[in-house]
Amino acid sequence: MLKKALTFSYDDGVRQDIRLIELFNKYGMKGTFNLNSGMMHPGTLWHYKDEVPVYRLEPHENLKTLYRGHEVAVHGVDHIRLSEASREETVHEVIDDKKALSEMFGYDICGMAYAYGAWKDENLDIIRNAGIRYSRAVKTTHSFDLWEGDMLVYQGTCHHGDADIFELAKQFIEMKPDKPQLFYIWGHSYEFDYGDDWGRMEELLKLLSGHDDILYGTNKEVFEYFGMI
Ligand SMILES: [Zn+2]
Image (cartoon, rainbow, N blue to C red; front, top):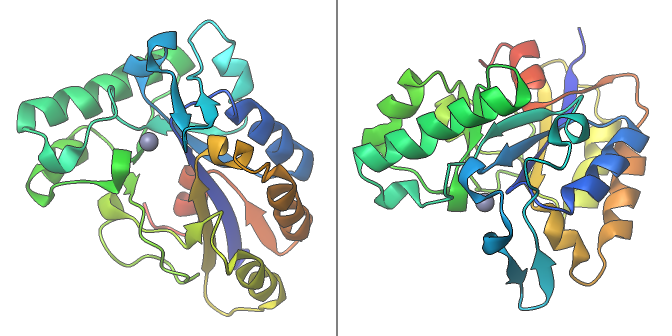
């Protein structure tokens, strides 16, 4: 059994996922992509930092082929802030997204990431009862230790833009742990278009790739491997 695993989590289902998945596939990485089933249309176009156009991928764009080998997960039908949502809105946002995405991709989707990293403790039962086994928030732990809290409020290691990410990557590669360690990186693929940050990401993937003591898996795969879900 491997003691180290690496996984990625990317939100919103945007055009830039295509380029990111090419990089993931080139370097043997696996990721989880959190999609909003109600926003897959041109009316959702916006500009990141007033500059980078963010187009959502649409259902006719061969999404099954694009995301093959990776995991698709829930991000809410309409990307609303669940910390401010009623129970009815939470049911719609989570259960209807899970249903639509499971139908679209042909498997039972069981993962999730919170839009804006926001949730409400009193509505977690809705998410749990919907069959969601883990849901990611956006805090930075800078840690590889397995998350010991509720998997419905999972916190990963860091965002890909973290100033310490190369240092963390080197530490991770060199460590010979006697207990399971997980490197969990999250972000949005459109962020790489701002200031053309794709080269930095490719450098990171190259550094982390090809190590036979690291399991490269989707969120679900690594969580299952380490018995976290
Ligand atoms: Zn989002």
